[in-house]
Length: 427
Image (cartoon, rainbow, N blue to C red; front, side):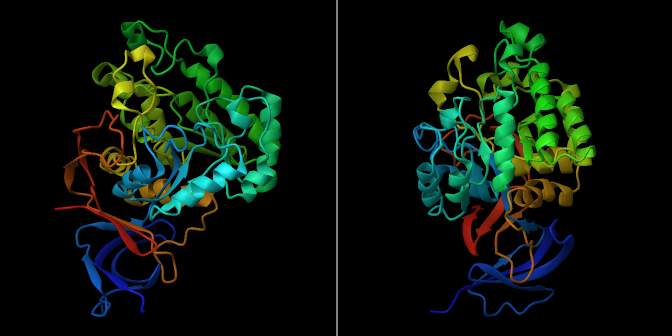
C-alpha cells in the first residue's frame, strides 16, 4: 500500500527554525515533508489544502499542561486534553506531574506516555522533583529519565528546601533534562489566587504578594548559576521576576522563563469581572507587571509562551472565591491571544511569536526542531491571522476560562501531526 500524499498550496510559511517567511507549496508523504517550493505539481496528492491568506507554521509546543491523568480525570484526561491541544494548533504538549498519585515513578511515566501515543499528537510527561510532591526526598532522576520523562517539576508546589533543590538541579543537569519551578513562597502568601492589593481588599482576602514570587525566583536563579542546571521559571507574573531573569541570563545562567497568555493579556481587575475564572496561581497582577512581561517577551528574557492549561469542573469553580481551585484552561485560546495581544498589539512579530510558541520550547526540551523543510516531520499548524472568531465552545472537558465569548483573531484551520490532519475547523 503506497503512502498518502498531502499537498498544501499557497502556504505563507512562517518558520522560526529556518527563518523562512515566504509563500510556497508543500508535499507531505507519510509522516514527513517531502518537498517545498513554488508552483509544485500537486496532481498526485490525495488531498490538497488551499492555504491562501493563511499562515502555515511549525506545530505549536506547549511545555506546561495539566491533563489530570491519573486520578482527576473528571476535570480532563489525556484524550480530551489532546483534543483541546489539536484545536489550538499544538502538535506537542508536556504534561505536569501533579496528578493523583503524582508522577513520581517510572511506571507512571510509561503509562501516561502509552496513553499519549494514542492521541494523534506528541504527548510528553514530566516527573516530580520530590517523591509524591512532599518536598522531602528526591525522586530517582536517572530511572525517570530512562522511562522517558521529559523533565522534572513539582509544579503547583514550591520547593522550599534550598539544599534539596540544589541537589535536584545537580541531578537534572547530570541526566541532561530541564527542571521547572513554581515560585510562590507561602511565608509571604496571605491567600492564593489574587494579587495582594486593592482587588484582594475588595474581595476581603489577603492576597498573594509579588514578593512571594520574587524571593524564590532570586534564590533559584542563583542556584541555577551555581549548579549549571537548565532551569525554567514557570508562569512569571511579576515584573520584578522579569528583571531578575534578565540579569541571570546576562550573567550566563542557563535559565528560561514562561509567560502564560492570561498573564500577558489580563490584570488583577479581571478577578472582579470574571470571578473564579480569573483565579490562578500565581495571580494576575497589575498593569505595570503586565507591561514588564510584555517587555520581557519582546527582548527575549521570557523565551517561552506556555498555557498552564488547568481544567476544573464547573461545580468547583462555582464555589466562593476563597474556596475555588486556581487555574484556567488555555490550549484553545493561546495562539489567538498571542496574535491578538502580541502581534496585532505590536509587541512581537509573527515570526517571534512562532519562536516563543514552537521553536524555543522545542529546543528547550531537546525535540530537535527542523522547521518546514524537506525531510522534516510534518507537524504543522495552519491559521487565519486576519480572521476573527469567538473562542468557545471548547473541546476541553472543562470551560473555566475568562476568555469565553471574546472576539479574537487567528482561528486554527488545520492541525497536522506526523503528516495526518488531526484537526480541521468547520466552516
